[in-house]
Length: 210
Ligand SMILES: C[S@@+](CC[C@H](N)C(=O)[O-])C[C@H]1O[C@@H](n2cnc3c(N)ncnc32)[C@H](O)[C@@H]1O
Image (cartoon, rainbow, N blue to C red; front, top):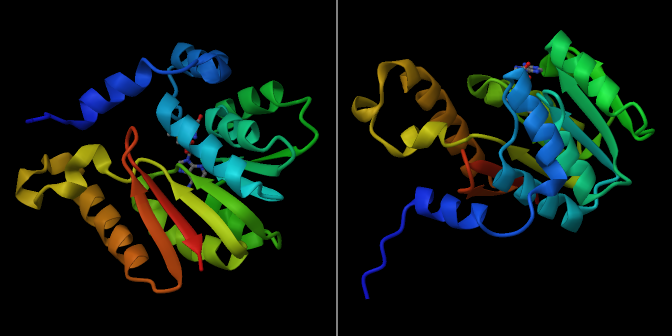
């Protein structure tokens, strides 16, 4: 039997499954504000990984208005979550939305700056910043991870262009594609790590320390 498969067909199928209500209010708010947020199926993947991992300390860098943070908290409500974003307005929304969460701390600053100054160590990290900055953030994050920590980088497939030749990639994505591809190779060639790409939405790069 010939079964045609494409990520789009897969997304459509997944979207028809299960309840979306848990993230709906925050994702709708992001839509109304015109700000980016973690997509539904990627939220579910993060929640599932966190619920298995049950991290004592988590960090969400590029937390935006907080959809990804909600995905983490849904996975393990007792985690101590540090959320970091460089954008002032999104930060104000975040702090208001999560004001009753005693286990959530917010920092309005660049993730790189936060990682250079913190002495904390984390069991789980979710990174959703500018994609070409992933390698630099990883270098700063690695010393701040506990043994067996797990890290997820969002949107690692750059609209699928990491799987294309440079000549097939529109000019505006070419340097992004090259830098993210180098980062993917850097991670997969590191023998101290377990790495996997989960092809939901824009693609999640999941890393765990051996
Ligand atoms: C795709 S949005 C994040 C969406 C968010 N994770 C959510 O699910 O609601 C990317 C965010 O990263 C922030 N950002 C980009 N580069 C950053 C950096 N180096 N440090 C901290 N935040 C950064 C932007 O301000 C933006 O809010």
